Image 1 (cartoon, one colour):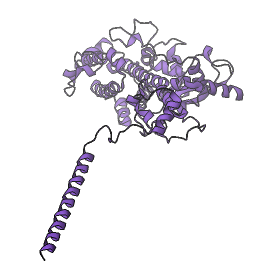
Image 2 (cartoon, rainbow over the protein chains, first blue to last red):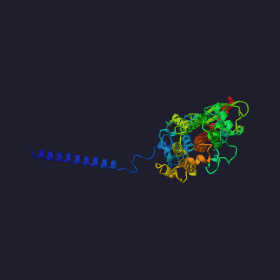
Image 3 (cartoon, rainbow over the protein chains, first blue to last red):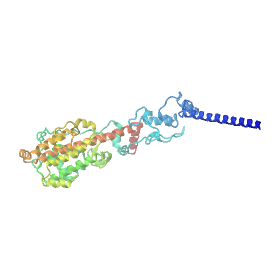
Length: 294
Length: 145
C-alpha cells in the first residue's frame, strides 16, 4: 500500500513537470514569433531561385531596386519596357520611377498583369489623353506637330485702341459713325456685308470675322452711330457671342478638329480648324505657306 | 441673362451705363477666373475705382486694369450724362463705350481659348514624338492619300 502511494506520487510529479516544461516551451516559442528579427521577418531575402534569375539578367548582385521591380519578374523584358514607358511618359514623370509610381495603381501602365517570362508580349499602350484621340483625326495638326513639336498657336496682338487714353478718332482716322460717310471698302463695309450675309457672325468659325470683332474700329463702325433696330440686334448678338464664348471656355470643354472647304489658299480644299466643343470658336492651324502638300 | 429683355431696353433707350457696368462685372469675373496665370500676372494689377463703384468687390487685385479704366469712363458718363451728351450730341454715351467693351471681351476670350488650345497641343506633342507615333501616322496617311 505504501509502495503504491510512492508510485502515484512519482507519476503525478513527473506529469506535472512535463506539463510545466511544455507550457514554458510554448510560451517561449510565442515570444520568439512575436519579435521580428533579421532571420524570420516577413520582408525576407528573395528565394534562391528568384535571386538567381535576377542575377542571370543583370549580372550583378541584388541591389536596392525601385518599387516597380519588386513586383512580378524583376528582370524580364516586359518589366524593362514598362520602366521605359514610365520614364518616357509625357506626363512629367521624373526619372526616379520608384519614387513616383505606385505598382498596381489604377490607370498606371504597370497596373496590368505581368506576362510570362520569355513570351513576346506587345508593349502595353500608354495612356492617351481623350483630347489627343480627337486631335489625331486632324491630320494637318499631326503633321504640323510632327514637323515642329514646339508648334503652338500664336497669340493675337491686342488692338491699341483698347487703351482708353487713345482717342478712337485720332487712331487711323478712317473710323466714322455708321451712316456718316464710311470708307467705301473698309472693315465696316466688310463687316456690314458679313452681317447681312450671315446673321450668325459671332458664332461662325471665320478668322476674318474673329479678327474684326477684336477690333475697336469695327465696333465703332457697326454700333457707334445712331441707334437703330439693326444696331440693337447687333449689340444683343454681340452679348450672346460673349456669353457663348465664355461658356465654351469651361473646363469641361473639349477642343477638337473640324474641317471646312475653303479656297483661300488656291483651289478649294478641305481645311482644318481647332474648334471648341460647341463649335462657337475655331482657330485655323496654319497659314497658306505652311499647308501640307499632300 | 435675359437677352430679349436687353433688346427691349435697347429699343426703348433704357439700357443705361449702370446696366452695362453690371454686365461688365459678370463677364469680367468669368474672364478673371478663366484666365491663365501668366496673363493674369500681366493684366491683373491694382485698381483705381472699382471697389467704390461696386461695394461687393473687395479684392482689387483680381480685376483687370482695363476694366478699371472702363469703369472710370462709365462713371464719368453715368454721373453726368448731359455733359457727355453735350460733348458729342451725335452719339449716345453708351455707344461710345460699347466698342471698346466688346473688342476687349472678344480679345480676352480668344486669348484664353488660344491658351487652352496650346495646353492641349503641349499634351499631344510628346505623344506624337515618342517612339515615332506621329511619323507612323503621317506615313500611313501619306500612303493612303
